[in-house]
Image 1 (cartoon, one colour):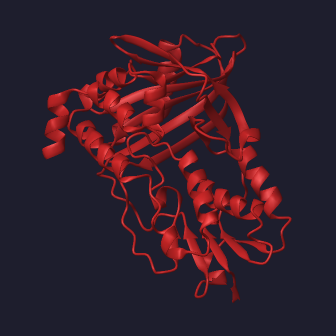
Image 2: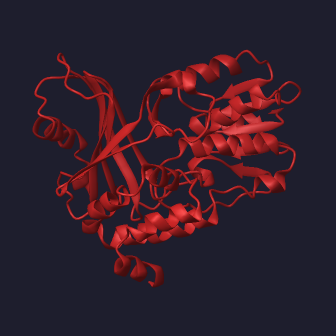
Length: 355
């Protein structure tokens, strides 16, 4: 079987981002790369959104950027504006096309559907695939979204509704998320923060239908696109050999309190390429002990007090837009952390700290 210098297991967001970073930095001129991905074709299957904290390689794949966003609860709504860090959404189909069209021009890059087609023995392996079935009793962010199109102009396409908690919580944490791509086109998602064992939470089609009709007042629309997913809000354990580096969510690049992953993947990819010949240094990378610690407490509060979470999120977003965006994007300093923490209910978080 053929051998390669580098092997990437999983040709999704993390795997392709790393492959693209290797390619544009001329790391594949004299080295060979194999990408293992079993999908038959690449098509639009995801929408990745984030606050743009730095320049990235995929500005030409951005569907839209926004400077304004809101959060809604039964107590009212709060609107924030920020021109320094626009909120962006990326079309996965454009992302896949951009990367694959470039990689396939390089004869040193090969694609395979199965791992047993190649020899891993002497390769540096980057793995983005979870091994086995993950624990469904733990906390997950699971969701379904539909892009709808209306015959009339309905949406304010200058404002993202990040969280609308005006919906049935069913003793968990539930909100809707609306990304208006134009005045008559938007992605609307129903999102749960819960375990995956309660099937009653997964009637996503009905949830979306009722929300669009009753909350948004839209009676007629067509569905252009459907996406569905589940993000583990915990770090799975891995038995790595000495020449395997985990990337993407499998490598701890998901911010557990938010589910945001895309920009973390981009930073990790750049770090890997910069240190590609120093395997021990590659193992050192993480989102930071500070965020790991804070997220652990936050998720403990969420699991034990789901009914309090709409108010907690609402209060968090009452801080300055710069502070909350940087905190949620792993870029906050100690003063910004204190601003966020000061908005949290003290007794609940103190209990979560010690129990």
